[in-house]
Image (cartoon, rainbow, N blue to C red):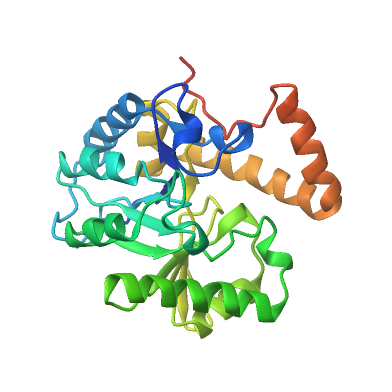
Length: 270
C-alpha cells in the first residue's frame, strides 16, 4: 500500500560563506541554509529511502515527500535545478513584500519556476516573527494581499501557503482559509494532516545546516526515532515560546551571539 511521506522544510541553498546572498540575512537565518552539495546529497538519500519520484509536470504521487522552501530567497533557482535533475518538483513559499529585492526572487523568477512545474505559494507579506499573535485584521491582510500579489504575477490563483516564523494559532489558519488558501503548511513536525476551517494543514520536518543526508531521508521516510526526537524538541521549544514571550526572542538572540542553538534531533552527526 502506498503511504504518504513527510514534508520537509528547507529555506535556502547557498555556498558556504554566501549565506546572506539568498533570503533573509543574519546568523539566525543562516542556521536553516544548506549548500548545493548538501542538498544534492539529501535528494539522493531521500530518493533511495522512498523509492518514488514526483511527476516533473507538477503532480505528486501519494508516496512522494513534499520538498518545501520558505521565504522566497533567490537560491530557489539553484534548488529547482537540483530537483529537476532528479525529476522532482519543489514547493516555494514566497514572502510577497520582498519580491524583487536583494537576495529574493524576482517576478520573472517566479513565472519561470511556475512554468517549469514547481508549486508557488504564499509565505505572508511581511513575515511576522510571531504570526500567531497578530490581530485578525493583520492576518487577513497578510494572506489576502500576498496571494493577490502572486496571482497578479503568475496569472493564476494561489491556494497553498506556509506559516512564517513557526508561530501558529487557529486564527492563522482561519484567516488563510478566508483568503482562499486550501492547503497550509506549518512548522510542526507532524506526519498526519488536519482539516480545519475548510483547509488542509500539513506539518513539516525542519532541515538545518547540520542536517545530514541520512537524517533528511529518515525524516522524509517517517522513521520513528528521528521524527520523535524532532517532535519532542519542537514541543519543548513551543512551550518555552509560550511561557517566555518576547523574553524568549531575546534569549534566542543571546544564544545565537554565543554560537549556541537547538538542533532538531539530528542523530546522524558527521
